[in-house]
Amino acid sequence: MSWIFIASSVVFIVVCYGAFKLKQANNEIEKILKTNAALKAQKDTAETQVKNAEVRKKNEESTITRNRNELIDSLQQSNDLRD
Image (cartoon, rainbow, N blue to C red; front, side, top):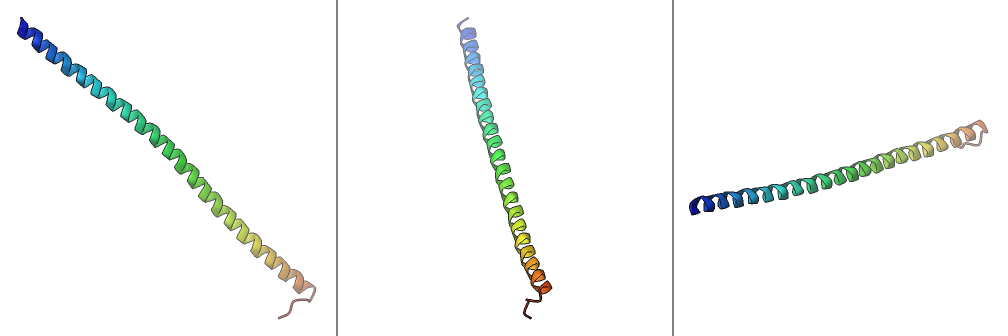
């Protein structure tokens, strides 16, 4: 009878240890998933900022070019442009 009690106690301890490790693993998985989601949000934000900066730079360049061209055209029309 004592062997049955010892064996069942060992099985119970092993099952409890397995459940404890499984709970730890699940907690670690949840932590990693939350970190992953936060990093994805940061990545999306950074990509949006880069895209916005590129669009702004392109718009500024086209504005500068257009203003220069408009100035040259107006000088040509008024015959003030020196060649």
